[in-house]
Image 1 (cartoon, rainbow over the protein chains, first blue to last red):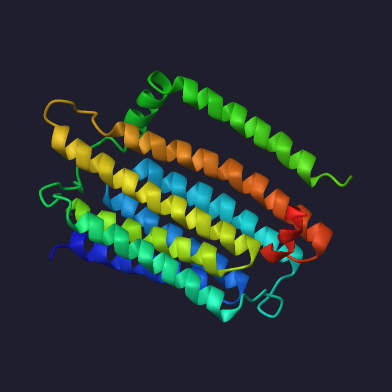
Image 2: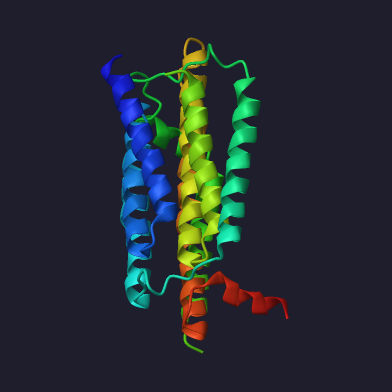
Length: 166
Length: 109
């Protein structure tokens, strides 16, 4: 087992454990911190897959900006484990059973798929470098790029309108 | 790595997110579980782009680059979504002094 496999399993276990801890943590702030660990794990996966640009963007945008926004809102609302709303037990069990059933169905369906020969290549390939991504982004995807700027502008206006004290 | 491992990892993360959305009542935690599901999909898109690149690298040197750009656009949309969603949650907290989603069932009246 090479170093790549070891890193893959380590990052996978880290991601799944922290995802479970996000869901089961009583204190919302702990949930946010575990979600940051999850994003770092997923960024590690991106680096293993040679998508360096996406790894850095994932760290900056998700683990940096979005999680800071979540933490900021939690601090603003002064929430803690005591004020955490509790669902009744049967609804929780039903939710877990529903999620588990979805997992079961998807895994059972995908086990049949003939994907044994398909390899996600690691440690080589340069499509994840910012040079190639940038060329493709500004040649083939200019219109979606510009539309996303309009989306950002409308989101900004929407936030100001919603957040304004009337 | 065979693509199977990535598919099963992403499916597991996605289902944990689904279970979180269904079991929690804190609106922000539900929102974070949605982010978790988006990230599971992103990871699978990157893995598929590398799979495509591996299969077609001989004929098309930039095969598979579209998958990584889709991930980039998903991140853009997620950032906009988070900002609007958190603004709505803050408004809801300002009106009800709670972020329990069950308070929102008044919307049906």
